[in-house]
Amino acid sequence: MKQIINTIKSPSPIGPYNQAIIANNMLFISGQIGVDPISMKLKDKTLKEETEQVMINIKNILEDAKLDFNSVVKTTIFLSDMSFFKIVNEIYGNYFEKGKEPARETIAVKTLPMNVNVEISMIAVFN
View 1 (cartoon, one colour):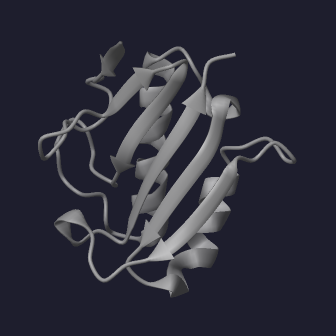
View 2: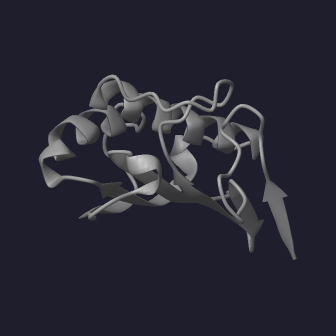
């Protein structure tokens, strides 16, 4: 059995998917982009601002599921350009306790939805 998670504190999906799904004691968070949930506009003045909004959106989904970043076991980061790695990595790293970061891969892709620079998905577990 699965449970759907959709919080108004993160942007509504822009396609036929949900923000997250709980199944088998795990939370699967769909790829999040730097869209402000209120205005539904992209926070893209700077890569830092865009990445920070992505992480805030994920944080809100985790909180709605009664979890936090310590529950995350796997992350996938998609970048429109691998030269963005250092900035995104720095902001991303601020959300995790040192030494308790999840497994992760970072992939450069040709394009992302709404031509964003960064999209991040995560898997978390309930302890």
